Picture 1 (cartoon, rainbow, N blue to C red):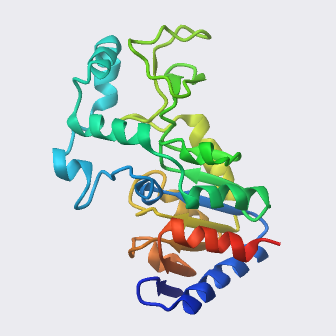
Picture 2 (picture 1 turned 135 degrees about the horizontal axis):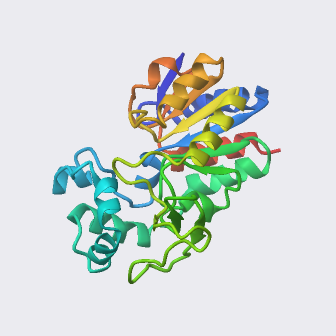
Picture 3 (picture 1 turned 180 degrees about the vertical axis):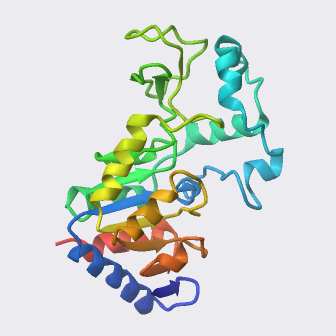
Length: 267
């Protein structure tokens, strides 16, 4: 296993490690990316945990959000539209509205377009991968710009529009509609988890970017890939629970490392 830090290495050494990652991806037949909160942080979206985390500032919320929503969906929507919800949700919502894809997002889209990366599985809800142009995308925790029926799973894109009141029942089945983003206590939708597992099962290389590898069930996919023989590569500024099973660990941000990887892999 190779581990390197961009804060300690000279530029030639950093490029050498990026080259090592590029060689592994070039030799793979199906490379899949998996991104976590670190990608969003680089776009100005605060994480939940850590010194500057939303929960550190505002306190850890109740973990029964989905159960509360199901008890009174209209009341939940009314509280949300009137901003009578947890302070951390208000701060997160404001940050999401302002966020734009950074160089790392655009590099992932370009890597997919040139065929170096076959798909991306993300734990983020910010829709920035989609905005950057990633096409084969699985959003495990949903997409903040969509609504989803909790009965049939039908999704409707909102674009930049934010609902001002509780949405009408689902046009297809009459079920209750909520944001596509997965709430605390809500199971990952079956179609999404099936799609994510299908990508991991095809992968012989997984590039884990900006993820602490602690949130289940998404993080478990990385160990499934490793146990099936896939090579795991990590790009993260700090060591994580994933580090011991990685073939290469690059201590860098996505915004720095991914454009360099794209340049190295470009024809």
